[in-house]
Length: 188
Image (cartoon, rainbow, N blue to C red; front, side):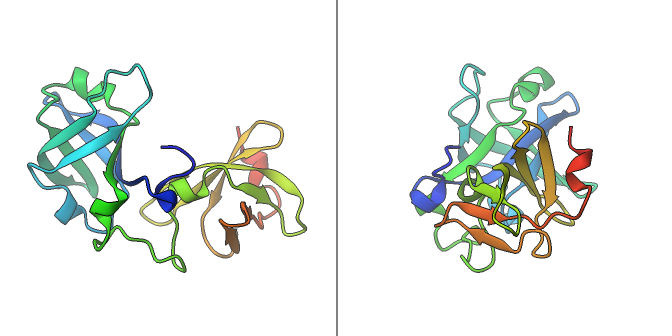
């Protein structure tokens, strides 16, 4: 997804595909919707966003959906086996913003942001010094993680909680990261 994302009229990420599960083409997904039961229904068709040259279909039709040990598993009509499922890794299932309006995927500007709103924002410490740039967001069961490419090129992960990221200023192009001492020492 481009950094402009849905806030500028593009698409809403419903899920990000992870690793294959089993031999029949099922995949794990990282859910980006508040209504997985309503969104992951057989017959639902989602546009895809994947790296160019991967051969991923432009759209996928859900054939099956189930919850397995707190992880959603999806099967697609276009993907019959594990080999096909492996090719989907990292693909995003998306809806046009207009298709999501009125659904549970809408984000209240005071309560949350889409990954596409955050990617590209300047990450600053509380004094205003630039520490890097936001490169992604991982949605977690307990808390989300903000990916930050640090000035020295390493990638850091910051729990996306108000105590550590007290300011998200999309209009101003920045986030304030109040990282505890040593947080980025663990970055690769």
